[in-house]
Image 1 (cartoon, rainbow, N blue to C red):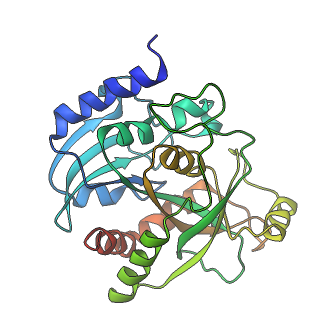
Image 2 (image 1 turned 30 degrees about the vertical axis):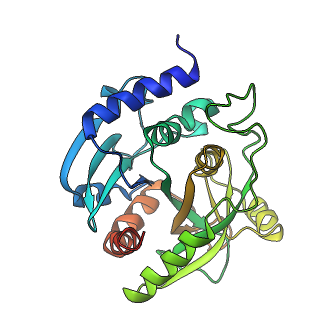
Length: 273
């Protein structure tokens, strides 16, 4: 089995031969948000399973395909789906796609997700620009021997989510009449949803939204020197906020309901890069 770097390089070479020039940005599409990939012009599409070493995406709401095409006049790589800790994957597998994008030469990545709202001021369907994160996964994608070809041993995480890209997102939202909020995202293992007590604890330490992805990818992207923007679609209010149980169907349904607004925001961001 090739080492991690060699596996990433093989996949990057396959994507390079498929899509030609390096995309100006990559967009990772979370649960129920994959419709953006269908809007790309002149698309070239590959199933994750057709790319070397690429992990399959098996969660409802994740199509499991790479689409390279044009949006807002920019050449974009859209990753419709991702893999998660709760599926049993190790961290190297979870950040594989991010590292491929980095080795491909992509220097800006937009990480999107479906999240539960912890901040009681949020409403279902809100779009939250991620200002910072809290890693409650109990691990880090950089644990283990460091390969300097990916990045430095101790990368700075003072500004994981680019202040410049966050300002661009705000400008795009204002120009398109889209209401956005800002907040801190906390990542947890899953797949069980959080308990009300856990949500109260997360609120106490400063979290505004909770989900089961994004943080490892953001860390790996910064390790490689990529500029990161994170956007959460608040698809449901977290456990205990409302007097009702949580279901994944609600997550996907809400994401589909706000698809037009979400796509408009992404397009507005891309045209301002």
